[in-house]
Image (cartoon, rainbow, N blue to C red; front, side, top):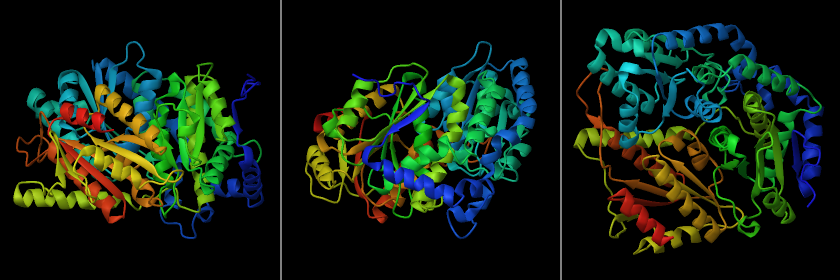
Length: 566
């Protein structure tokens, strides 16, 4: 078989019948000087009014603005190592945690640098596991949030600060905490009040999902031993390329994403070689939250198992990212092309090209958003789930219990909540899938469960079975993490999603201190997680989405029932 990329070009596409539209659009971008206008911060590239655009373009200049700060970052890392910290736990959600997660998983931790992990789940099992693995005596806690008001991040802070104060004393606890936030945020004030070791104040004109090359990404990168100067050098090459009218890799990618989405190929299916697998979750948030609004959107499909060409509908675009000469299943990709599916491939020379790749996808996303005629920087539908979650919390505080609707059916270990008659779990799943439309709809599995590898593997098997059975693009997300990622698209797109929400009773729970250092806890992490699940369900229903909610009395038994039902 002839190689798909005989010259091993750093990026190429097999767009087939869509090639003329892509080329015409790129010509249009050039004629309208869109690239030049982006770099001039011209908000009219996207919308006639500047709100939430003009103050969200700082990331275009992150490479230049961060270079003078590298000395400060490097001195901080030296201080942390000299102080004897052997562990670092980042407390964050969404844009504050996803890029650090990619850095950690792609590069690993260099010899002599502290072990590094991220907590971005309010599931009590995840919180308790992090507490056990990252004791205050040897741990530096990074509290990372742009707004300073993210409920999950502040709950994490209150919990771990209280544990640190109990074990280290009030005068020492603050020295084990660092903040990354915007100037003037509530977190900045809290960090000053509680004596944090360090506050990194980020450029406020950078949105969370565009912050990989700012303090939010580079401080964690340096803490695991990455040469952040080399990383920025690679990114600078991509920045320069994305300023050009010809051979612009960001425009190339964005034009493909946007034009194919306009023609129904709006399920961006990510395929990665082993070393680049972690980048998928970051791309998922960037693309979904930026484009999923005004009845439009590009749905990234990350981590979906390979299938036969015939299980994929005419709504797919396959994007392969290869690290060096790492293997990809080229025969499978060629078979997809033979079946008429467009695909593209990007090749990274080595792991330090990750800096460039972050910028390429950011620039491509704003180009695709131009094609879709949307603002890539706002998130108008994110607040709907938060509003509903706050209502649930308020009811809990008033009544001492979460609102509990009557299930439409119960099985041995599961309660079923659905708007269609279904006496069993398999009947409910059948009824949900029957509402889908091949080539347009997608199925989102939303698991408010511990984000453990075993649970993830079982759910991925369920995901594959449902994909093969329905022919629908199928995604899997752990809650509440996905609320800060695909949650915007779920409520803001054209309404083609089917939603399978899975919750379960917690085997253990942990209270959220009312204030940092306080032993009183009016609410627990399980209560917060369930409030978010209930709030998201209601927001989906209010948006006219089709939702099946399954609540399990036990995680293991409930998953077994689900596996049998599919």
